[in-house]
Every structure is written in structure tokens, then in C-alpha cells.
Image 1 (cartoon, one colour):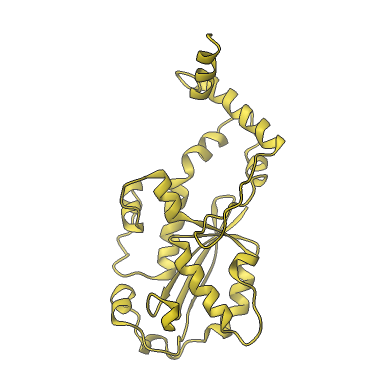
Image 2 (cartoon, rainbow, N blue to C red):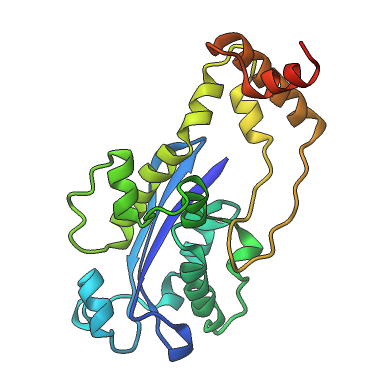
Length: 243
């Protein structure tokens, strides 16, 4: 399972006003481990950067006016993300900007959703922590992740921090499964369908396969045996059956 944790910095908030990407940072995860492979570039947006945006990321036009255009890095970027699941905090924002840049290329390029699946880590955080602050800084505090270097937003730094946050948010069940002697975890993980969690995409209803149901039952058997009070699901079943 190949995932790319990605972040962008932009000249402003809205592509409808012609705002562009000025930085892309992305790090690669394979089977939930950082591989050390990354993609990072600054981009000449060919337009002014809003003062509000510059106050967030600290990048001025002077910093990027000698950098490559998006068209110059597009091929390498597409090659890096193709076939992966993208993990992005507030994915509709970044995907919208990337697709806007792709639409401006002289040659036809596929939309991101045609070459990747997208997981919105902000939507995931809101599911796990409803009613709480779920920006990246709040999640770092919640999960004890050091973000002391994050005085300003930076795409690569934010991608690296988000990778740690995402692994922490999703690590509990994964770690428990990995400890089970009854389940081939790598096989179970690789058999999972890719799930799109982007507000900009229609979400398919994905039903469990027969093999996934078998693996789920095996996990419940393990949990029922190892947990102090048994598996909640099995206890409820036993109560219904009067056992």
C-alpha cells in the first residue's frame, strides 16, 4: 500500500481569483512506514502573492520568481503521485489547486482523482474527534508530536508532520492487529480497497469481501480471547442470545 502525504502553499485562497501553487511538499509511505522518498519544489506562480497568504507561509514573490513553473515540474510530480493514495489535510483545497494547475497545462493532463485516490485527514480527524479542534497544530498537541519548528507553514515540513499525525491517528487498531498471531497483517492490509475521503468526490459504498469478513471474524476471535472483558461485539451477541 503506497501513500503520499502531501501539502501545498499557494498565493491565496481561491483559484477563481487566479491564485496559484507556490510550493509542493510530499513524503512517501509504504505499508505505513516512511521510505525517505519525497517530492519538494517551489514554483513561480507568475503573479503576486497575497499579503495574508505570505503572513502564513512566509514566502514572497522574490523568493520564487526564479523557480520553475508548474509546467516544468508537472511530469515529475504526476509520476511521483500516480497510483498512490494521497493523504491531505483539508484535501478539497489542495486537490482543487492541483487540478487547476493541471488544467492550465498546454497538453491535456488527467485530474488528480483519475490517477490517485484521496484521503482527507481533516475529515478523518473530525470523525475521530468530533466537536474538537482538528487543525494540524491541535492534532500535534493531542498526539504528542513535536512541531516546534513550525513557526510558519511550509509544504514539506507540514507533509512530514501530517505523516506523523496520520500514523498516530490510525495506529491503534493497526498496531493491535499486527500483534495478532491469527492474522497475516500485511495480507489483510494489502487487500483493503482504496477509499476516497474527499468532499470533492462522490464516495462509493464499498462492501466487505468474503476474505475481509473472514479476517474480521479472526480479529474478533483474537480480541475476545485477549481482552480482559472480551470483545464488546461478541458480548452483545451473547447477551442477545441469552448466554
